[in-house]
Length: 341
Image (tube, rainbow, N blue to C red):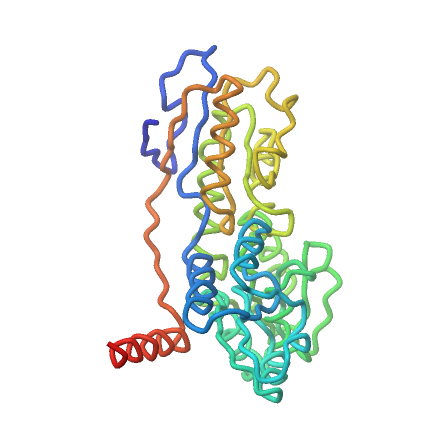
């Protein structure tokens, strides 16, 4: 497999393959982001340090393969915090939780490990700040997403959720000059841009975050699709159906006029999709593991797509540290081992 570095503004074919040669353009960056790596590591370290069972509220990340793998190691996934027995250890998912969930955990003496993505925590902090300053808050995102549920809980009495431009038209606030907006971290850049524009038209003095809330990984993966989709007859996005950022990648491809599908793994590929297609672009949402991507590549090779080129649109080297609960636990475990020796 060869690797090509593609400038975000570049156009045109990058591999020099003949028109009849079937090829795969493997996008980079793809797959796990820093927040997902951190969340998965937290569960694994907790299981290794404390032993099973470890309870996890909601899916640690939105990928069924990852959740099943962790469940096999002893993680118990629950929907609500009330399902965790009193006094047990629980991990909050990468999508964050509301203050009500934190209060419930405290009242039931749960041992909490917080795996909330730091970029989601940033949005929570912004929501609290704007509410304290007397703003009506507009939260741009998908109402049924775990992240929106958690952020909304920070200031529910002053927050309204909008998912499209039509929702903006229906907004009513006490003071049109005292309005602020925040966004879900996994939105489509185009989708967020249109809604933010509508908000600025309706509320000319609207305030927003100092830096955009859409996370670097969501943006980078969308930019990669945008820069390569025109060279492909089909875009395959590896990711689960409840993964917001994975769904947005499919939308980016389709909005550019290239057929795109979201697949859990290679088994979800309909062979008819490949008929008449000479170039397939493959990427993965921020919660999809690389093993599933390689399964797709192997399948495509079997179907005659023998040329595989990795297209690097931009480098991605972000890392997040572990939460103090995990660092302290590791330190205690190491200390115990030292004493035992």
